[in-house]
Amino acid sequence: MEQRLANSWRMSVNDKKFIEEALLSDIRIDGRGPFEYRRLTIKFGKEDGQSEVQLGHTHVMAYVTSQLVQPYRDRPNEGTLSIFTELSPMADPSFEVGRPGELAIELGRVIDRGLRESRAVDMESLCVVAGRFVWAVRVDLHIVDNGGNLIDAANIAALAALLTFRRPECTIGGEDGQEITIHPPEVREPLGLIIHHLPVAVTFGIFGEDKSLVVDPTHHEEAVMGGRMTTTVNSNGDVCAIQKAGGEGVMPSEIMRCLRVASVKAAEITQTIKESVDVYNENRSLRHIKRHLKSAPVEVRVPERGTEGNETGGVATDFSKLSSSEAGGEDAKPPKWDPPSMGSSLDSIGSPAALPGSPMVTKGEEAPSGDAVESTEDPEVKPLTLKTPSLKQETQSPPRTLRDAVKAKQKKKKKK
Image (cartoon, rainbow, N blue to C red):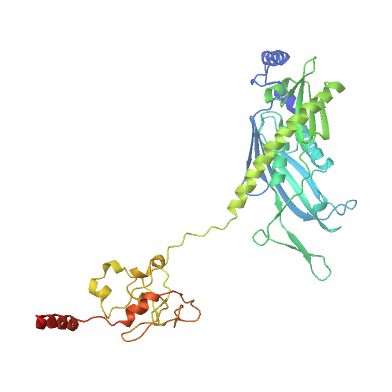
């Protein structure tokens, strides 16, 4: 194991013995239990298909891209999925630039086997034209910081990136039906991948002659362990892949024990991934909502109907500011109809002209004797029906004048 040999020379003999003796007592140097994971944090980028996973001090970034290619001859109806890893010296001084080492090749193969061999991604849905064009999905994994257990962290980053990746939608047209049009995201909404299940990798470290097993080994524990076993399972308990590295042998009973523990851990990690993806999808939908600026309030002028059916411009008037002569003069125009006054009694209304739709009653004329008062308004406006038996009596008797009052007083004086 290239990485384990690279780390061993930097650790002293006392440090190695301290880690081994602590593991024999079921104690780890970071305070965790034998089957306990470090803190897992999943973040996403601004674009679809970008994820960033931090498992303890291990930091991995994933980026998913796609392009149209010709399919393989033996599988003309299926797309392709490939995994590429990049280990830079910035993550660990033991990594070299250029040709990928043993750890980089093993890391890509374990993740690729868990995704492709388990048929987690629906490859047939990536076919555009059988035998001619299919989508080739590529996952690039960048190791930012090596804090131990790169396989588990890179696997989680790849799953999170695939769940949030969306490829452009394309249509088939042309005379022969072989012309493909790729629509940009502004024209048509991109389509996500069809993923049936999430294969999660769980790595166990093997220590000492007693074959002690721990989950999620750290950078220092990898330098001491004698072997490693990675099991890829989903939340349903289905075994997708098993990878055994190192010279230490493992009994079949210990392998079954690891599978039971890995099934529980895979369900917990799957739940964490789904919750993070749901939050990302919610934020993404909010970003795509078109928000309009708040408009300033505008005064709407509605044409009003006069008492004789004339249309006048409707400008709001404050009657409380009018004088008594302007509000109640003989030549004063009747005020606008106030909707709240419709529930008031007829006694509170000064004259029938105050009601909309009622005819003007002049001196010497009688009001219509029918129960319903017809309106001369536009036929589109529904007339207001009111029963006014008392208005007829008031309008039949002419109003008394000042001359009548003087005559009455003179007659009384002559009688005396």
